Length: 498
Image 1: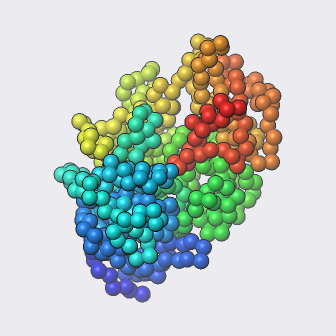
Image 2: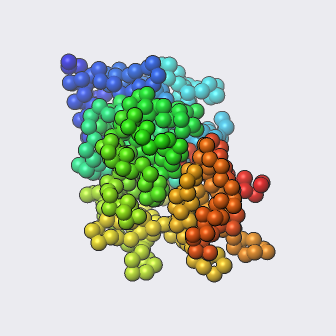
Image 3: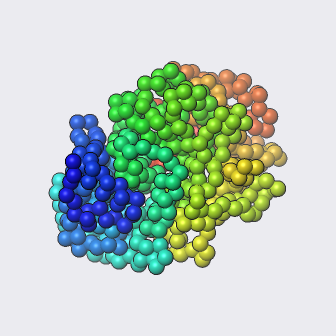
């Protein structure tokens, strides 16, 4: 079945995406692009509706090179607007969902957006109603025109860093960087067309770009995980089963949140073909319990690595039996368009990872890089086979009572205790006792773990690695941020309240 298409509807500037859309529309336009409860959207419908929205954006005066702020949760409307932006050559950035109306407007202006798109009616001065898909408010006070980078092409999207090293910064990703990313994954990832992908992450986290754009590049069907479902591991499991999800990307924290509560034999009820891990260090203890069952069901487990500054992820490693046996999972070798090297060596083995290559960004918003390389702040080591291993963050070691400790080592041990779905730790200074080590424990449903039991388990650790204080939190009440990681600041607040 062939479908007549206007070439401009598939001219996103991203060659792999253009090729995928053209192929599907010419050969199977009724293929599903999106599924949500009783709502379905074919590729032909998606491109047609997104094309209409692109016309609306242009009619509002927005042109290629402009940037708009998107104020919407994961939904079909946001999916369509993202595709419209790709067709129009308009860059996008996600508005923080916790902001109030005036804060959202200020955020859009501060990030040099030409307009703000929203699903809600909070913007009473909305200039344009985009069909039944939301409202568009033009921002006259914002600097509208984006300056094209001569080397990297037009801007495609922006994400904000988490701000762990200071104030959050805007990371613009241009066509050259995302093209380099998809060139690499298409050559190295054997993902079949027609898979069902789960949209787990907020648009403020660039794993969502892999979920949304990657799904289209590989000709898949996107299934949205709604925010109210994401807070309940049972509802996530039901979504995986009901929609026969084949492809997911998760932080290790999210994996533990979803799977630790399940029984291993139930994994055979799922249709998973691949799980990608990203965003945090993947420990063997996270997957040990499930590894053999996932392997017997032919589920590919891939550990990936990459900061937002290097476009989603830039290395990968397929988990093998040897990794489980050795107790350490590599982040893999750099993609063909990327180079890794170690500098500022801590010893003969460990050093700070520096990235160069096609995926590396040009600099933070209005702060161009002086050299086309990115010093990550991640301490890594290089194995004998050329694969890299993540060790921890620069400065990630702490001194407690004269001993140098690694918090990751403690957390991985705690997560191996039956009934512990997640663990995080930190060091606090105490006037009376000096530095003390504190651990927060995520207790899975159906388990009761006392502080006495935790101390008994931790007696197997060296004395200087044993936490002095514990905070236990039920899994249903464990705080996670929009990036799918444990909200450590909230846990610290609860600890002090306790």
